[in-house]
Length: 262
Ligand SMILES: [Zn+2]
Image 1 (cartoon, rainbow, N blue to C red):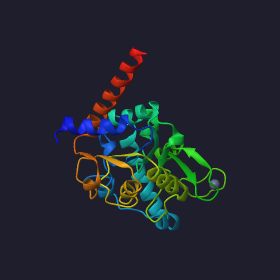
Image 2: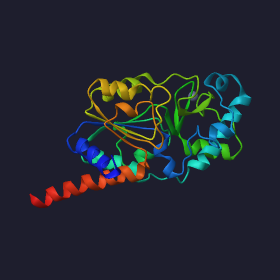
Image 3: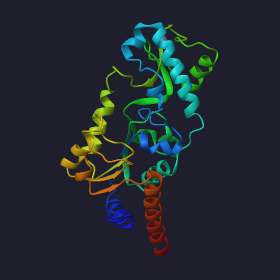
Image 4: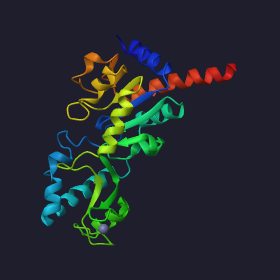
């Protein structure tokens, strides 16, 4: 199928459903200038990974970790939602998107206008940090200010506990409630729209087939092939911004036409 035909298939699925679950990975944010951590030259390439256990046990490891985060924050500051993020926010406004599951920690879906209640952040968020002892939470900007003063082992202002970004670190278990909700929305949707993940690692690898087994049609948008392309109704290897932008334009056009008739 050529591009226009595939857009036609995806449109048919999206027009016919008000029960869409989207699942996004790093690929949706690369067009916003945020590098895929796993890609060559990405953060994981430039810095050694610090596990949750190492973070808790070693001041030296914590300082290395916060230096890495500090560099990452600089890279992420100024990143804005792109056309793909905007299209997913639009899909929610149209009443079609019920849930948006993301592996990203950049907060760009909320910036684009998706409601925080509908966004499930499987890997947590870089927008806040919290105390490992008492749970007190701060906007990341406040912690960033301390990093800029070279305080690379920031402590809780209330109990002196260790402070860590609200992201899920290596060696830290996935938030159970988020996982439970993600699976629930995936197996109860009619259309599962996957954007920007190569579906190589869990839980990304097992969610799309679970949705498909439960009866959902799959739309995949990712630059590279995934292990599950063969069960998808339609697959795009084009840029997410282009594909979702075209889908959004077509869906809006239809809505506008409908409005002018009535
Ligand atoms: Zn504390």
